[in-house]
Length: 102
Image (tube, rainbow, N blue to C red; front, side, top):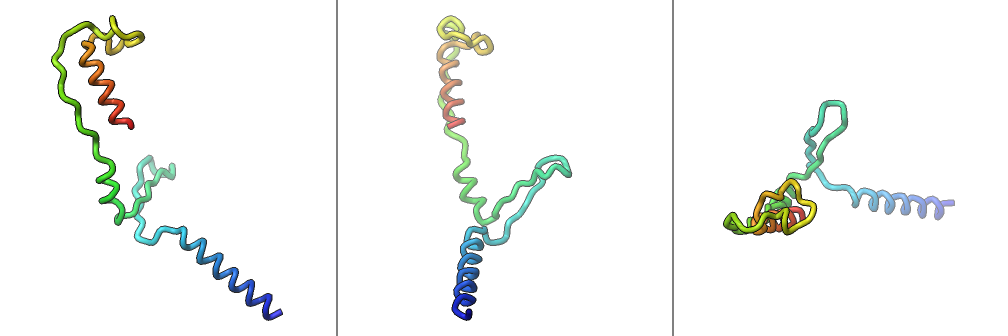
C-alpha cells in the first residue's frame, strides 16, 4: 500500500512538473483589441517584444521604375484595376507585394 501510494505521488509530481514546464513564466501582459465583452485580448511577453520587433521589419523597397512603356492591360490578362500602369511599374508593384507578404 505504501509503495503504491509513493509511486502515485511521484507520478503526480512529475506530471505537474511537465504541465507547468509548458507554461510561460510571468510577466504576461494583455491588451484589449476589440470591443469590450468580445474577448479579443492579445497576450504578449515583454521580454520577447524586442526580438519580435527585429523579426517583423518591413522588406527593403525596390527602386522606382520610370513611367511609360506599354500598359499592363495589353501585356497581362485580367488586370483591370492596375491596367493603366506601365509594365515596369506593374512588375515592380507585384514584386514588392510578394516580398511584403512572404
